[in-house]
Image (cartoon, rainbow, N blue to C red):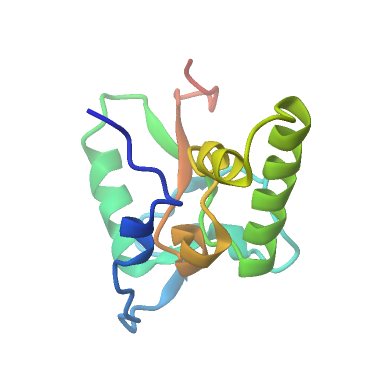
Length: 140
């Protein structure tokens, strides 16, 4: 079975429609989630997700074994920042693999960073997270 990367034309062909669902700050609300500030931005956008995504994370956290919690690292990512992440990673790959074609670089980059034109983080529909123990230490 082959992996479909975000740069695959089949992914870009999926229509995206605004659902009208608000972006909410996961640090507030009925059950605030833990948020790591390593990817924080001055506006606090990193801690925002679509309301339904937040609710699903709260439900998932409720099912974790005792003492474990989710730690949100980054949610919403402004399109300009997504572009920076993608371009930085493609530059690194070009440097490490000078014989690769642009498509090879793009495909490899898309395994870890979504191309800006289809990035779910820029819609508040994706989240980078990890698990922490009761003392807030990340699990391996």
